[in-house]
Amino acid sequence: MANSLKLGMVGAGFVARFHAISLRQVRGFELAGVTALKGAEELAGSARAWGLGETRVYPSIAEMAGEVDVVALFAPNYVRVAMMEELVAAVKAGANLKGVICEKPLGRTVAEARRLVELARSANLRTAYFENQIFMKPVRAALAQLEPVQKTMGPMSLSRSSEEHGGPHEGWFWDPTKQGGGVLNDMGCHSIAVGWYALTPLGKDITFLQPQSVSAEIGLLKWGQPFWRDKLLKDRGVDYSKTPAEDFATGMITYRNPETGRKVKAQFTNSWMFEKQGLRLFMDGMGPGYAFEVNTLVSPLNIFIGDAAAEAIRDAELALEKSTATRGLLAVQHNEGDLYGYTDENEDAIRAFSEGRDGFLPWSYGLEITRLVMASYMAAESRRTVDLTDPATQKALETYVPLIAQGRGAEVL
Image 1 (cartoon, rainbow, N blue to C red):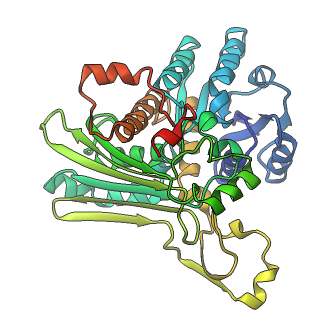
Image 2: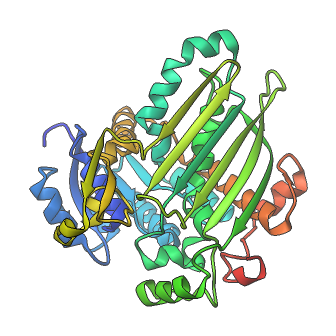
């Protein structure tokens, strides 16, 4: 494909495939390569069938880096640092990359996220942190519609964000020592990011509002029960009787406007115990005299399948990501990749790297989100509100590893 950036994916699992699907709606990218321990041939075959390019399977990151313009790290959290070290070595050996993408979360700890930022800088690489929910068209449209109102009445004062479903696809996601925690690390990073973004005054940088404090609670409400715990062990090979992780998290972050001194709040809620149609993203925000609300289970398309016809259904997720039902009244999203922001974040990365700059969300931003996630774990563990302006707390977060991520979740759940 002439004049296209050649993209190479590291990883061929669920997230990589979701991004590949979204790239079918994006111009300017050619999916030129993929490298992964498993699934690479299948993903490459799908990419070729979808017209995304002559996608090659490479045996290593280093070899692929020499043949592409952009590398996207879509591999599991626990191998991110090692993979980035291999990528940086390839760049220093002559690979001419225009940029590198990392799927959320940037790191499992502040120390890991900082290491990734430093590695990118050491190779002078432009970066894009993929937090899809900030790019969601409903969120962007809501803020655009409210722009004249905000100019008159002032910015929002409260945001609430949640992502909930029945649990991840892969076994490593459930393993807190590999993933970096439970649902708070897996999905809290989404909700914290979009809540911060929604509150940010018009025209200000994405980190303009200064985090002041965080309170949080976590729980193991479903997957610690004997029936579900046994099912998790059988289906995913993870034993929550020994190394449990939280399946529910909620919290509140207070931010301060450095120009006005005004404080605003963002609430987040996440769970792997959601028992409705499937994945639900819910966001709302309120300001003086105005509000917005986004609910991805409200769809223009609904399908009903009765018991007599249900045997014809083989894949519940044809209707909705993380769907747990194949019959009844089903909410269907006909274009999930676009709805959830994957299409737009890829378009942003294309423009940014083509122009020689970082994406709208650089890795330094991903580091700040990791810090807020870790502070939320700290608040939940200590059962107190964590003061993010305290120098001692800031220092402690640099080396903090949640008990759950250490495999000691039974002490706090």
